[in-house]
Amino acid sequence: MKIDSAERQRLLELARASLSHGLSSGRALPIALQEWPAHLCEPAASFVTLRRADQLLGCIGSLEARRPLVQDIAENAYAAGTRDPRFAPLRPAELAEAVVEISVLTPPQALSVASEWELLAQLRPGVDGLILEWQGRCSTFLPTVWRQLPRPSDFLGGLRLKAGLQAEFWASGVTFYRYQTISFREENMPRCQTGAGAPS
Image (cartoon, rainbow, N blue to C red; front, top):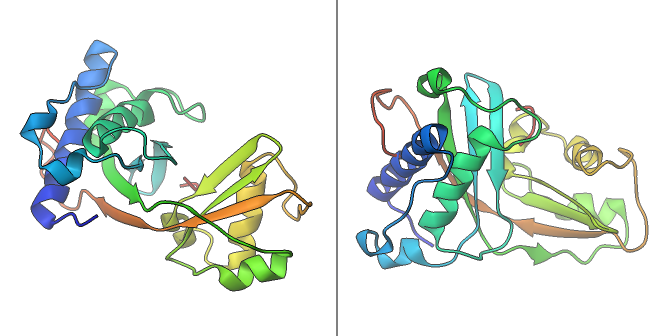
């Protein structure tokens, strides 16, 4: 999916508007799909991350494309500010300090690996997001997490810890999926706009 610079800004405005709407109404901003380009209404998976400077405030997303991209972003923006179990819900007064980042995911691809060495050899730092699944546990790191964990072994270890496993865990049946993202964030955007870290 191609998203040009004007569309990226509009999606950031949507995410901020949905978060603002949700903090006051308790639900994400309703979306009128007819007001959006057709390609942004195609099913797609996204994550919305909220930060204050380098401090993570919330990150919620989807791994499967199950609803129109614009709706997914609106729902995830609201959820990132109110439903991330790691953080207290965002207060309305904190909204002006929050920076919104959106990541649109490519379809995950299963990795055929028989060992940790094979997995690490296939990972591309700064490029790949990774999903771990094992016996009902699931965790993911977006490619942006490479900023905090630039070594592949640390990236993988952190992903295991996020899933509630040991950092060196390996077992038959554990599966990994790789994906990439189109990521963009508010950069020097006026705080008066109302539309739109820790490892995510």
